[in-house]
Length: 290
Image 1 (spheres, helix red, strand yellow):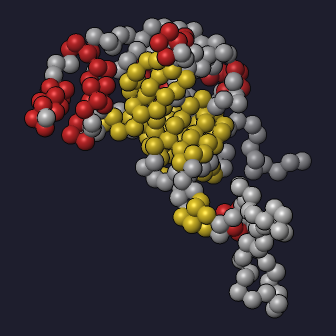
Image 2 (cartoon, rainbow, N blue to C red):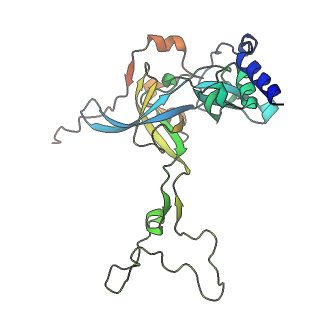
Image 3 (cartoon, rainbow, N blue to C red):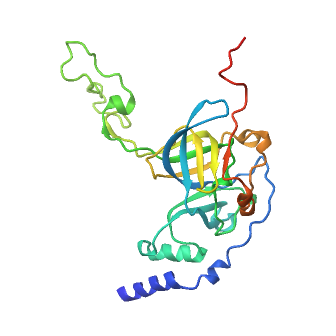
């Protein structure tokens, strides 16, 4: 049995990719509408830094990098009951991938990926399998939502976990200043209700920060600079997609619409400058008002 599995793995790793590559077709041109829902991307959080706008105002930003982000599978209404794209990010060694997943990637004609996520899209935003997504999928000035697991804090008390005020800090309180306090009632009901806010494990939960502004795009390093903070530790995989609460004309300034649809053309990326920076606009905040 072991030798059979080894043979299957070897065949999946070294088998011809020409047949699988036949699934990859060129991107068909489509028209963006206010009801269109594009796919998101999987990026890796690289940390935080700062940049300055045209007025000299300091803006804190989080740097996100795309690594070999490709379409791995197309899910359609007829077969799966909904329309979505499975996106993979960051190539990994085939020896660290299970046999079923090796077959899944080999069928798509892409390298094995470290992380897979699904993004719901509208039928007009479907991309061919194997399409690579780059940082220019987004434009500077538009708004995005970022989702990732938060930093794990371990076992924490009620004051840090839920923001309780704690016990009085007077002389009458002895060694219970940060205590939770009473958690139950009297003999009836004689129990602690489920869901009571108490000490426990904190962090490590999925969180989404909505409507973050894209401040800069680096086409050479595939970097996305978003204004503000993003959940997760450094090198955490982050799902980035168009802001759900900024649909239609609110997703980006009018001069940037329509957005690249269903994604940016690779030929246009080569003609773009390395860095694209968003403009804050408005009046100089440092000028004294009369």
